[in-house]
Amino acid sequence: MRWALVKVCLAVTAMVVVAFAVPLGLVVQEMASDRAFSNAERQAATIGPTLSITTDPVQLRKAVESTQMGAAGRMAVHLPAIGDSPPADIGEGRAGERAVAETRRIGRATTTSVPGGGSALLQPTALGSGDIAVVEIFVPESEVSNGVATAWMVLAGVGLALIVGSVGVADRLGARLVRPAERLADAAHQLGEGRLGARVPEDGPKELRSAAVAFNAMADQVVELLANERELAADLSHRLRTPLTVLRLNTASLGDGPAAEQTRAAVEQLEREVDTIIRTAREQRPATGLVGAGAGCDASEVIRDRMAFWSALAEDEGREVRLAGVDRTVRIPVARPELAAALDAMLGNVFRHTPEGTPFAVDVHDASDAVIVLVSDAGPGIADPDAALRRGNDGGRDGSTGLGLDIVRRVAESTGGDVRLGRSVLGGTEVRVWIGLDGRSRGGAGAARVRRGVRRGNRRTRGRA
Image (cartoon, rainbow, N blue to C red):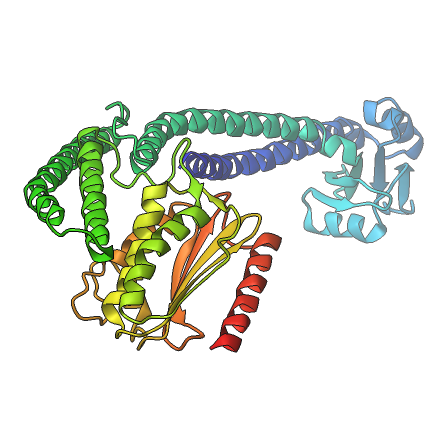
């Protein structure tokens, strides 16, 4: 907006300066020309009394040389033939015979250009004999344009000063208009980044003051809505404690055995997650807390831990499980609970939406700037992958809320990565989770190594399948 105001003011001022300066300069040029020829007419008139008295060439030559123009060699007198006397030219004439004859014929003063530059004023003068003599005054070009260049320079300087001054005024005015808008945009960015205390001073032009008032009201409403949402999440989570307590008491009576231990472990984990939700909501922090200061975990360790839980269930259902790429430490900027929740969401989908006995695999591929986690199965696949990634969409799978893949997507996007669904080498669905390690967009040499590693892993999987 500021630069736009400056450009508009520059264009308008330039047009005004041109509209006034150019005609004024032409007027100055015309005045200089009129002044030069008026002076020539006065000089031509000085020889008129002498011509009315005598036409003797000798006397006329003396009279011409006694004038200012004659002494400078700029006056000439062209006498016609009088009686037996032939035509005579007194002084240095520059106009041609045709121009002199034409002036004598029409009987009024004329001007004509002369060779070498300049002009000649031809003034007819009546003689006592009734004939017409022509007085010629040479007007050089320097006299015609005397003072014109100086006037043009003065006009150009004044115009430039007007343009510079108008641009400066427009810039200051634009700054007053833009500053409140920049504060409003900055506050909007801060609010978008999660700094809910961002507010805008209500000053500036009337329209921007109204926008600031609306923004502050919106920010207050957002804070209130988030507070209500946190309280609702805490209240709803707290209500789960009663049925969880009943479940924990019931699991105590299940006795010993793998199924009983798994049930008790699941109930304990559910209690921990509920406690985390309540604590996070009460502390007024984002419930996800995906990436932050000190956040991060060893992806291999988390995947091994969660696969130990799911492998027992897979064994009960006769599913073949393959795990690859978790034999070394792979650090990622994601909190351990969030990665575990994302992995549980993907593996839960495998168990929920594929028949018993369907094999699945989890692969981890590491590079310098990205980590890829692949969860593939040999099930029927997903009919519409794009719809499955939209929050709240079941993706064509019965009984699904669509929130599981949304959890996975938010974990990946918090690191600058993404989630893609495709066809796995096992014949079913492949969920590819791209986790960025440096917050940059996917690409570069490290990403290329990850892709090559994924292709090699897929070929190995295809060979075993």
